[in-house]
Length: 166
Image 1 (cartoon, rainbow, N blue to C red):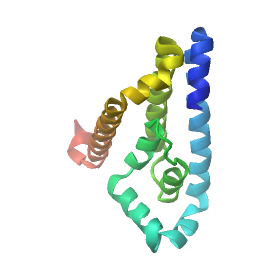
Image 2 (image 1 turned 90 degrees about the vertical axis):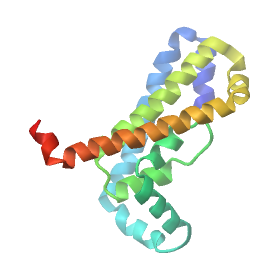
Image 3 (image 1 turned 90 degrees about the horizontal axis):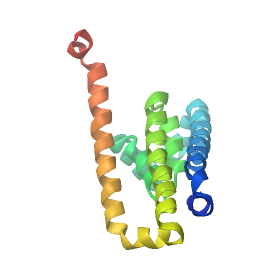
Image 4 (image 1 turned 120 degrees about the horizontal axis):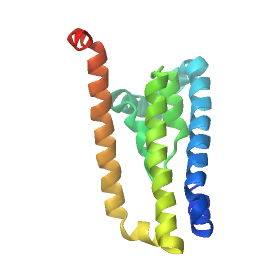
């Protein structure tokens, strides 16, 4: 998707953000379909794989870091698997609203940034990203940390009875 989006941004700059919105919509729809399937019956399948080995490590990682395990591959230009964290989120019954917001924000940041870079740097976009890989990684980590803090603050506000009274 990234290469297609940048190509559209280079060849038809006026369509860059329309293509980004289509990419965001398609990615969010696909993630929500898998999330829904896992939410309905994924726990049984997940139980089979989380009792040992890599499955157990992934489950522990998800339990500890929550939706950051979805946010990082969703925003990263590196080829990271999205299906496994999305499936885990559904099977572990993460709230629909939290999941949707995390995937939407991550994909929006990623695809809108790629559209803007494609418009600005043209055919040199991927060269630019490679040359600034450290900066890209730092931005992703900072955004991941901020998302964890925000999610925890929102969860605490929902659980805190004093927060409900004010």
